[in-house]
Amino acid sequence: MKKFETFTGTVCAVDRANIDTDALIPKEYLKSIQRTGFGHALFSDWRYNADGTDNPEFIMNQPKTQGASVLIGRTNFGCGSSREHAVWAVAQQGFKVVIAPTEGEIPGFADIFRNNCSKNGVLTVQLSSEQVDQIFEKAEADTPLEATVNLEEQKVIIGGAEFAFEIDPAVKKKLLLGMDDIAATLLFESDISDFENTHDMQFMLT
Image (cartoon, rainbow, N blue to C red; front, side, top):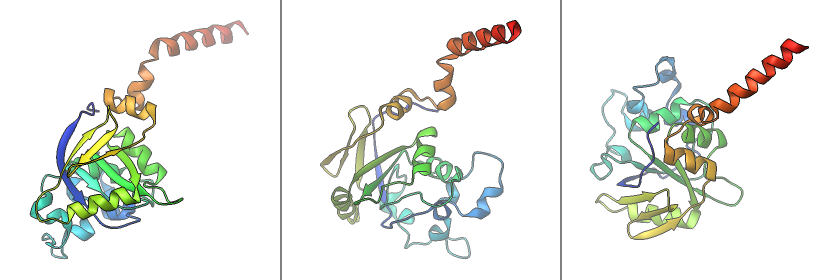
């Protein structure tokens, strides 16, 4: 997993709430046993016409969002099934960050999707609904909207507006170091070996 570094990229704002994992990557793409090649499948039901051509009405196909690396959605982003393919599709399309709002008791992200993102190097940022409304207003322009994301300082700058965000310190550390769960576990390899050796010795003595 690559280290998460401060970057500036283009915004793609999909103005829908409850974007579920089937919308992110429909079930027909789940047959592959590989973990690569899913970027083209992201939002495929909305992104392509029935004949496979691009749907010009969908935001991802518009000139102002080409090469976008910051994805904006509404509440409860990534709800539905636990398929990790949804995050693979997001990441392999080139998105490094997904931003969604909390609204009352409604979270910005479904828990499993958010956890899968952190395991695959994708940063999820929860802002207030008012802040995300501001971003969508800025994204209505016909020109590309740029965002600068600084995980170390926990802030996002979009169209001149700065938004601070909270993040679990453990998730932040792993993203900044580029460590997945396995890499984080291996930091304690010597402790694990010592425990196993001690456990084996105790077992032999009983």
